[in-house]
Image (tube, rainbow, N blue to C red; front, side, top):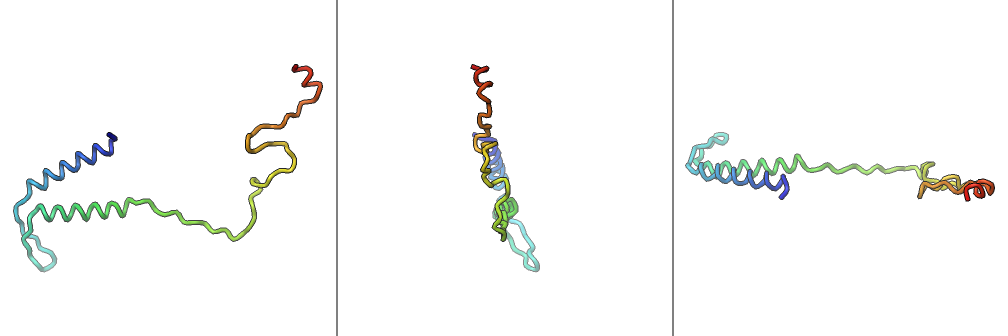
Amino acid sequence: MSFKTIIIIVLSVLITVIFMQNTDQVMFTILWKEIYVSKLLMMLIVTVFGFIIGVIVARPKKKKEIISTSKEVPSEVHQNSNEDTDYISMKKPNTLSNEDKDYIN
């Protein structure tokens, strides 16, 4: 199991234990209204809202596409007519003279 999975399991167990220990009813004042709700329900609502807010805040941002109006191709992309360098394999063509080839062999 990965570290992230273990952390999720441990947090889930801790939250469940805390929820089960807090089942008594308490009075909450929301604006001008007083209501009696179990701690379990209120903590569950707060946890769900916190999770939703966390997902919204932590999601990756979409990258903006850059729209180019020019039709120019960068000079690095152009194919060179002289074969001094092969950009695909990064090998230089054989430029040895016949004398050099004879000396090597």
